[in-house]
Length: 188
Image (cartoon, rainbow, N blue to C red; front, side, top):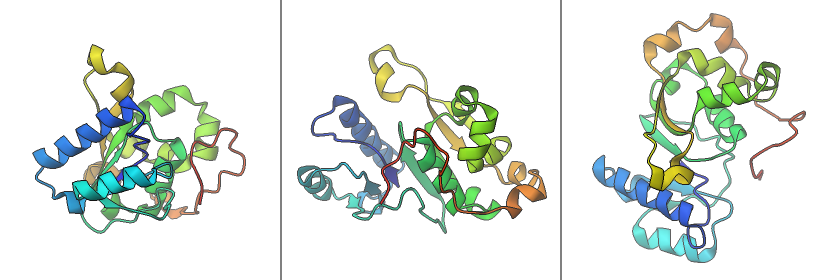
C-alpha cells in the first residue's frame, strides 16, 4: 500500500519515489495489481499512468486507516505524522502490527523533533508503539538526499509488541487531532 507519493508528473522527487516503488515491487516479486496507491493530489493523467502500469489506484481517501489481515508493506515516504498515526490506530493489535512493515519517515526522528507532550497528545499511537518498533534508516546517498531523507524501514517484532504494557492496548480511541496545530494530512 502506497500513500502520499505526490504529483510525479510535475515533481522529480515523486518520480524517483515512484521508480523506487516499482523496483521494490519487482525485487519482492509483488504483482503490480496487488499494489494499492493513493494520493489526494493525483491528477487524472497520473491516475491513467498508474492504471497503465497495472497498479491499483485507490479512489477513496482512507486517511491512512487501512486495516490489514495479511503481511503488508506500507510505502509512505514523507507523509504527515497523522497518516502514520491513523495507520497504527486502524491496526492496533499485536497480531496486525506484527504483520506490517512501514517504509517512511523515521519514528525515532518524529520522537526527537516533537515535544513529548505533543507526541502523546496528537500522535498517541506513534508514541505508544515506539518501544515495540525496530527501525533501520535508509542509507544516505548524496545524489538522493532530498528524496529519501529521514526515511526508515519499520517493523514490529511479535516479541517486542508482547512486551508493551497491557494498558497500551486498552485505549483504542480513534484520533481526532482537535488540538493539532499543523495537521499534515488532507482529510476526506
